[in-house]
Image (cartoon, rainbow, N blue to C red):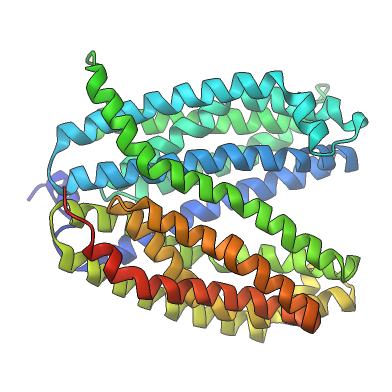
Length: 453
């Protein structure tokens, strides 16, 4: 067997050891997630060196950036679902058609949103509460960001198509390259070099656009030259519209439910603010640490997209069930181990973020309680990804809304009202655990009620 043939065989997720596939897929997934998180932290760090106004201006851009990112991630979920099932059926023409059409749809959507966003920068950010003195800085950043938004969106869709083939390593390498390039360009474009003073906050946006542009070129090259998943033939509009319907059937609910997350986070932050500034500081540090603690778990659950999709497309329901069980078991083991590390080293980790005893106490309380629910929270994510992969987006969306709006918000509020800040953290933990339990109960009925294509 040639090396190329061996690689193709390794990426055929309908055969071979499921645990081996899960490990092979999850590692790069986690690295890709880590790369994106690092990129955001680096941007924030360097812009913070410019001054408080620049950092505040960039902070105001986060909700808008998160909204478009959520929409893109939703479309990526849709692409993974449709393309992976086509790959599982060995229907390469379908996979190529959907990938090509999804990239075209993403380009159209981002163009419309970018133009509308550019024309409404001032009213949108005024509505979000930005002070007039920050508006020039926000406009400088967002004008560049909107101009290069396609460089953010299109590579994410392309990487989703690559993952659908069973290759999560290449997208991870692309994102690691983007993060590394952005880390090099940020100080250069923001602060300049020699007699050139740089572009300030606009330099941060430019560095992101240039870095993502490299990802765009890399993703297109791989999709066209290696995977043959991009077609330049004149399409039949009936086929194009069918592709768009299939992608958005999964992508629209996935993107919409992701957009609710910042609203829930804002509500929780408002609750924490009632306990004082030190509590907010401790909570903010704890949530940042939690995001890193969830990287491996999220990589494991994300691997279910291509794994379940390919096996579902190949009509191998038994492998779908086993993949879900193996993944949830691995997530539980990882979650327990990480909780133990966080609990054991809570105070030293908290000391890295603040020297306030009160803030550290809140940090320690959070990492002792909330991560107890990570194992079942991982089950919730696993089932959401599995349901999307088999073209059942609405149970996944309903579960996501149940967790954020129906469980986390009221449980946290009730806990805070009756038991203070510790009660609030117990409420968040119980909400995540309950969502996981509901997912377990609903898992088999949802899968059994779904017909193969």
